[in-house]
Length: 423
Ligand code: XIL
Image (cartoon, rainbow, N blue to C red; front, side, top):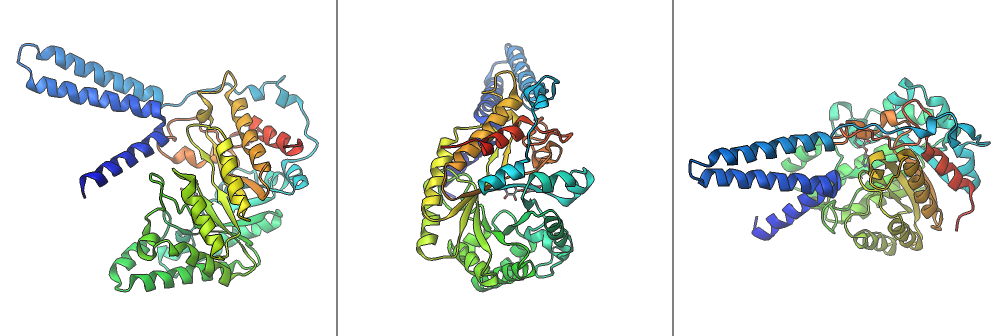
């Protein structure tokens, strides 16, 4: 590794840390860390006499670090104004459900979840009423479809339950996901390391997976995330994942060709985040379209973790994708409550609701926009609650229903935007 690639990696790591921890938190701890190192160096080179002052300084720095750690990484409590008796939300009466409002608009309103939450937390009855689309959060991922993690050894029993649930509740079911550089069976790497003809081998494994899975669900799952997250998180380029390493960017078009062959009637999406420079993703999509690769849409994730930024840029991006003749959907929307901390005045749940509304409003201005899916139903079961560091930085509360299944301002803002005239 030469100096420039070490530097590049370092900058990449800093970028990621800033995204995960916010600039304020990252820079505070970096400065404190550097101060501790500097004082230790001073301590080492100093003459005996004055060492106790330096020790004192180190002690203060360490205490400050611990205190700030608690301030930044501990749970907080925010008032739930929307539950107060005289609140706007407790006194209003919607005459139709979210699903009906979405259907009047001709779009999908969806949720993702795991069956065990739906069953255990007893909200299965609201789902078919409020939503018309469903994404199994994990059940259709490659390794979840395998018996004992063995490549080629499929067990569809669990996934079939999701199909039944979707059918019973008239929900469009989204197959998430076929090829994903961050989510594949661990056996794949081991096997690839052993074989001589890696390209051929990987192609045959991809062919088997996509064909088996799509054929199994043919007629039941009509829309698939064929490739997930092809863009690098840190740099403005495609992600150098296991598929890219062996097949180059061809792995993407190959996956779509296979998917189209397996089920010519299915709608095929690429799914993911935009990354550092939108142009990388736009170029990729344009190339696929120009080459006649069977891709029908792009699903933008939308995990808002720390900063609820301006949605104008997202709208511009989606419009450019739509202009290519592709459909666009928001596939994994969740807005951490604390991403609103800096801009909310007194009612942070209301600020969160407004943000949800703004996102949907922007999407509705895009021609080929077909739907919006939240990554979860109840705040009780959001993936952030078990994802470090957010599992400590509660409340995450990123969804439309709270832990007791009360409708939050976010629910009503989405509803109102669906009902209002946009443009
Ligand atoms: C997440 C699930 O929500 C978690 O339960 C699981 O542990 C990890 O994966 N982008 C995606 C989703 O495309 O599949 C991820 O889902 C969240 C990020």
